[in-house]
Length: 348
Image (cartoon, rainbow, N blue to C red):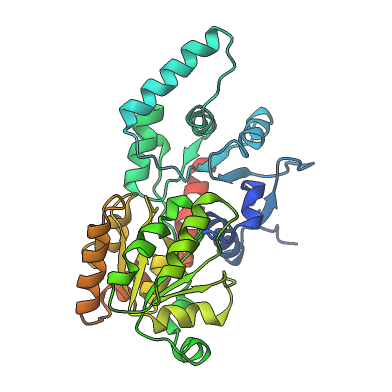
């Protein structure tokens, strides 16, 4: 009998909190796992209480306090560790290094103080290879945490090609809206900066649609108060990623907007672009690496910047340039190929 070729066995881990959040990191983890399986790799989703580690390597998505425990377990067992840091900060690399130096000094005095930067740095140092989503993320992690260049391989976020076939009719029929400005995401998360879009909405000569849930906190209360004051804002609860209404919403809008404080680089924006929406997006987090000169970039600290970006986008005709660029470079199939190649390089 011919000997069967060994199948690569991968454990994939992520913060447990992702199960409750329909966000970009969760999509990145699940879609990477799905397409790795389709390529013939054995993938198992694991958590910190996992009772066996029979893997060729473990890949952690997101360096965070929730994943430090499993990172240490993996290294203690001598299993190769891959980390997608999912890291961005408004601080410079130099200022983060200074914070870490101070933290190290305080730890010698027995304070027990530990910053999130310190935890992220430890996880990244434990990794055999790091897979940041963008060059900008790589440079920040490299310089802030003092990690050698050779341990990085940039693997971008991906998008499902199904969004390229989206049509607007389903959304238009249900909500009687079309050619609007759209946001999709965790509306109640301050990082997404939806409040800025809500502030300028009365000055936009289009309907503004927000798809995403708000929370029970002061920030969300302020957002909801602004929404009530404007007659062109429409709030829709989070739609499942597989809901046909989501892709139809992308196709029905004219402009898709992500005014976040940073994106790496914004999966929802890539989905919308595949559905042929024009994109207005934050300039922070490496977005320009994916969207090049085919999107409008805004400053999350300037309402006028966002208003100008949306106004300019609304005045332009749609074209297929960005859609074609994304389908050529950023499908999950291509992301899985790059991820698997990084695995093979590590294990060779």
